[in-house]
Image (cartoon, rainbow, N blue to C red):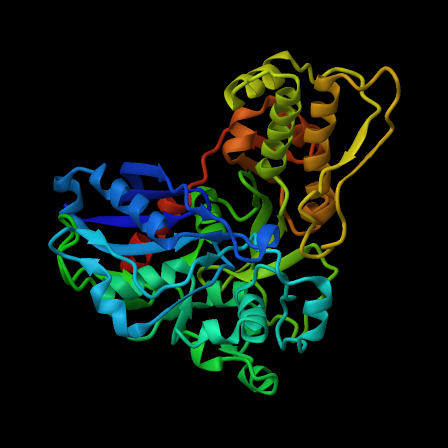
Length: 460
C-alpha cells in the first residue's frame, strides 16, 4: 500500500493527514502555542519556529508507524504571507537524527501574516510592485523591507528567507537554497505571476536584500528527497515544494466548477477557482477580491478577510476582562457556552456592528464601529448577534452574491471551525447568500488538501 502525507503548519495548530485513493486514512493535529512577544510591541505578530516544529513532531508520533512507513510522497502547506530567516550554514544540523528532534539554531522568529509593523505610511514609501496583487502589512517582502530599513544589522545574521513551510522543506531535503511555489511567492508581494518571477529590478533600486529571495517553482514540482529516516517515513521519499493553505483548503472540499467555498476559522475567506489568460501588471489595492495562483493553471478568486473567529475570540476575552474587574472568574468555555446556547437568532436587533477590528488589506484603516445603540438593545446576546451578523456582512460586501452569480457560481460550501460551532454564523450565511444554494457542515482541511494534491500530481 502506498499513501501520501499532507502537513499543514497553521497559525494556531499543525496537522498531518495521510491519504490513499482520495480518502483520508489517518490524521493528527496539535496546537503550537507558538506566539511570542515581539520586540516592537503590539504591532509585531511573531511565532517561535521551534514550537511549530515541536507540534509537527507530536503529530507524527500520533500516527501509526505502520501507516507512516507507507508514505510515497510528502506535500507541505501552511500559513501564507509570513516570512522567517535562517543561515544555510546550520541547515544540516537542525534535525538531530539521534534524538529525532528539530533543534533550531540561527533562525529568526516567524513574522506571520497578522504582523502590523508595516504602517500605511511605510507601505506608501515603498516602490510600486509589478504585480496584480497589492502589497500589505504581513506580506513577506513588506516585512523584509521593514527589517532592512529599521533592523539592518539583524539581517546580517542570515542568508536565507522563506515561509516556515519552505524552511521545513529545506531541512527535510538538505537544500542549501529554498524553493518556493508560485502560490507562496505571490502571497509575499513583488511577484509577477505572468512571468513567474520576482520584481528584482524594482527591488534592487531600493536596496532590498534580493539575495534572500527564494527560487520559484510551480506547485507539484519535487523540491528534493528526504535526507534521513523520519519516524518510519523512509529516506529518499520525495517532498514537493510547499503550497498555500488557502489553496489546499479549497482543493480539499471543492468538487464542481460552479461551487465556491466560504471558510471561517481564525480569519475568513470566500473563494472559487477561475481560468485567467493573463493577470494585470499592476494591482488594484482597493479591490477586496484578489486572484492567487491555484492548481492546474487556474487562479483562485479570493475575498480574504482578516476578521473572523479572531474577532469573536477578542469579544470573549473582553467579557472575561470586564468580569475580572468585579472579581468574577469565568473560563472561555463558560463564556462561549452562554453566548451560543442562550442567543436566539430571531431576536429583533437594531444594533449594527462593523466587525473589522483588525482592518482589511484593501482598507487597512477601516476599523470596527458600533451604531444604533439604544436603551433597550444592549443585552449581551443582542450585541453578540450583531457582531456575528457584522462578520458575515463584511464578507458579503467584499464578494456579493451578485458577483458570484455573474461568475457562474450557484452553490456555496460552508466550512471552518466557526461555521461548524456557531449556529448564528450559519444562519447569517444562509440569510445573506440566500439567492444561492447553501451547503453547510462541509469540512475543508489544508493538510488533507495537500495530501490529495500530492496524490493527484503523482498520477497526472
